[in-house]
Image (cartoon, rainbow, N blue to C red; front, side, top):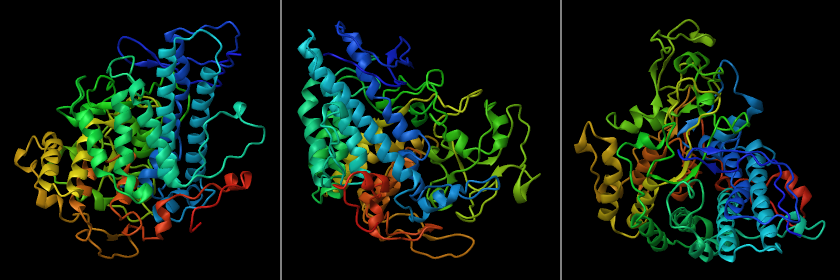
Length: 540
């Protein structure tokens, strides 16, 4: 029987002429007489797409996991809290355990996405109705790429995970999947992508926006090859370049925006730089933490700055050592971070209302005493994603999971690692040029510079102790700096640090290295208890 069962679907993509997305909610959809049209199929497969937003942006999800344990972002203790049983401190100090929320959430939410993909694919394959075979092949190809993208998360975060290719209803009762090695997971993802590329749309339009078209899938494949040495022990730099070149030579209009900020404005759905977007809508999405970076970073008084419907919570901020790496003329500093005296929408200066600075000007400074202590003024706040006036707790900027600048930087990194430093420098310069319009002579970077160390002043730097480690010893450290300047606040820093070999090696603020096993997260304890086929990652 052909059954489409869409449970709690909050992310059906119905694209209007302006390319903004609307969601509809459905509970069980059963019928023996349903003969789906192309539009029906498009809507049905959209049920599996919504999990990307939940994986990435819901509370203690992938975004926070990739950023708060790295060297750019911290959630310190604040006068109004942010202790939360120590989970944010453990993320910073790399002392997380197998029951911590980010450990559990990333696993559970990602496997939910996989189950949703499997369910729709199983039901499509099981169909006894007259569905156009070309349409069916295209739909299944999209879903396999989407499922591969979810496995990409698991491969990156946990390494050795089960591969499940059918939904629960199509598996034997009580089935417990075997654990695959990280290499097996990598091979599965690469094969799923490469096998399904021929069935994907080449188009860039309102029908493919927020979907896996050919160019987005090639970007995902490039990501796999970029991280192949970490995932499998064997580098695949040339293969990554091949995929990047296929996107660079596209004939559908992808390219760099003249201003990086255009990628992150509220109405960013027409950006030519976005290769794969996660659409966001405050109207159609009901999760409280749908997309609330502004709520997590702004102090409560900043509600008056943007006339936000709800009071921000004032938690996370930039690590000062990272901010100190920026050239002051770099617009990726001046446009993407919120600092200095804060004002209300009518221009009145704001003051602190709590802690030791109560009654003093609310002026964000590039200082953070430590993960265990901070005041309202401490730390630059995050504004890369435009905070619209009169917004709610949900930003409506579509999230660019993959963008064209990343294609250029992936190719540049591979060229650098293969010995073509000057070729890498030309691409990095291309990305830098839009960030130095006020000082264009600073945009150019040389191959020799990219081969040098990092300017990040690593070492403990808090109110308890100070040490000096520096970054000169990091191979291609300057390139790692370039990644930090271009992609900060985009939920990827942990992965970049691991690829450059420093995630578990360097100290920053209150963080000291705590073992190389921290390059992977532990498999959640409850999953181990449920499935005796699973073995815990080493060191946990």
